[in-house]
Image 1 (cartoon, rainbow, N blue to C red):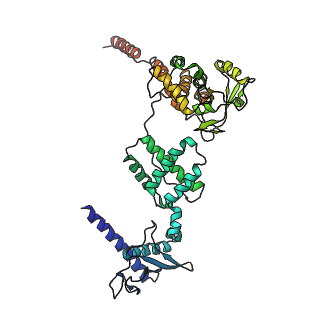
Image 2 (image 1 turned 120 degrees about the horizontal axis):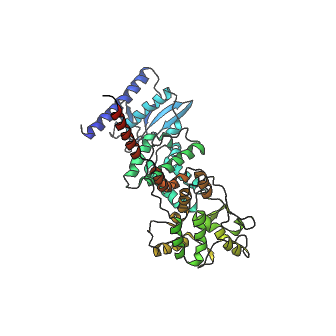
Image 3 (image 1 turned 90 degrees about the vertical axis):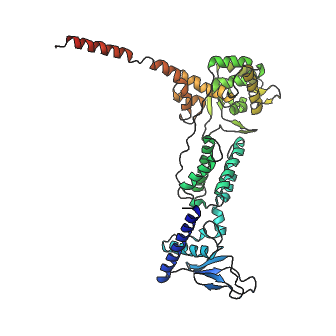
Length: 435
């Protein structure tokens, strides 16, 4: 059947249902309110005449109105409804008739809520309106380096959900959003970021603003497993030789501890205790701003022992340094390392060593420390503590480095000898068994 015929049949079914509900309500004397035309005839300024079930018309000029409303008395007050739940104005008589039937049904079932029909009230619940409020609230808490990405995500949500009432968002809407994102030819990881952020928005509506009672079920978005790259100790030593001498301290620190680059850049001498041999990592750079906390929700300060290979450098530098002085100084500016400057230090050494462009500083330091510790059979718990993870789930990704060790373990298992032994035993039994 052609698609337009299906649409016409669906429309006819809706009309029939509306007429049925109105007939039933009128026959039982329960019909609430009436349909009225908004305005008067533009030609003669007379009121439109109502032809029941047919519409409104000016008897003299034969003109018809372009706007309607449902006029009802509810809980002792007069209520005029000019739009449906989506904010669509009642621009046809049939649309007004359908809405009247819907309101009648809701009143009978005690589900009628006038705020869902007032455009001024509806705007308060539009996804676009609340997403603006959500963005404003979140930008006060997210890292500056993540602000741009957050704005992109929220803009995507607004473009899709626009003026949809957030109270009406269902699982099907989430599914449709996922399909919409897939049509944009973006990776599953990016799609997952969008969906996770939208779920954060709905959670904010439920817990912070208390608009939602329940959050709809979110389908799981499968993502490709990231192929972690890392360097072993020998490879790191070769790279260190290629690093310019004045830049080696911060790279050495990153390769020995596996801290995030932003944490190393923000490290100050007030965080270093030479006497007790400790370093406390409790701040990080985000863009050009220092935050007095580590990255990650609920991340706690991380106390680390001073590594012997850094003791001389730290002792010498701290002798005349003020508490607020940065531990690692960019020799080109005599100030702290910007992320861009640190990245350039790494890129120069990477190119000299013929390493692939895909090998990031993060891979050569933090990922490498986690992988090396895992390869040396350090427990997941202690790897997690060393890297400052809030839980061991984040640490599991480094366990891939055990594959070589597992290979040697599995090679100790074989069925060959067992099969030979079984054959020999079988042959013996066969020869000695009576005929």
